[in-house]
Amino acid sequence: MNIIKFLNQFSTENIQEDKRASRRELFGSFGDIGKNLAMSALPLGLAVAPKKAQARSPKDAVSALQLALTLEYLEDEFYDLALQSGVIPSGSRAEKAYMQISKHEQAHVDFLVAGLTAAGVTPVSKPTFDFTVGGAFDPFNENGVGMDTAYAQLLALAQAFEDTGVRAYKGQAGNLIGTPYITPALQIHSVEARHASEIRRIRGLKGWITGMERGAGMPEATQAVYNGEENYMQGGVDLTSLGSGSPFTMEASSEAYDEALSGDDAVAIASLFIVS
Image 1 (cartoon, rainbow, N blue to C red):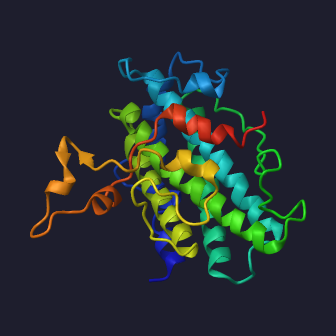
Image 2 (spheres, one colour; image 1 turned 120 degrees about the vertical axis):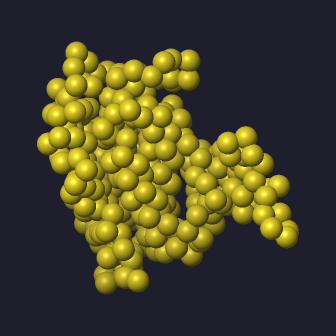
């Protein structure tokens, strides 16, 4: 199957065409959630404060969407700059994937901004990003690191961003249960998972994460994206005790699920690339 056509099946445009809830109905319902909330001025860190000890409230749903929007801003700008950089080989599988993923990320930004605005909540402002992390990377070859190195870094960062997105959406799902946004959020989560799988395969890796391995060629600084993925307990069940014949291995059991990433951990990862 053509991977670009496959990815496009899960575009936000198609999500919004879900006949069970029109875009107007969805945003109208969400408007009730956002009433009397004034989250727009909250710094990112405060907007996603730990909620383990808190009862779920509408405030949690808005915080979850503001975090999602910040991550989507990051991905959207990254793919835009990557496509403009000239680093990606023209006509390559990577270029085609980046072009399609870029469209998705822009659609995700538009979707979340429209939803928050319709709810009467001011969307968080787009941060200023530094994809060099203070000069540690040069993914767009702006500082002359060389095309081969820049391309390797560009793919590695894409993998880190997509893997973070997958886990972050899953981590915020609990805050969206009972709201009209739970279904589209999990659909976007699924889209991000397909992005991650394709980027990982372009890098010559499996399409999924094994244990807490970040994969060959990934900078050590990205390990925070993968910590916790080694879990093989699901719903209180030890997956390694299952399977017909030989039981599932620990590695295979960890590959079956993406683990949720907390809001704090997602913010810590994204903050590496946020200047202000």
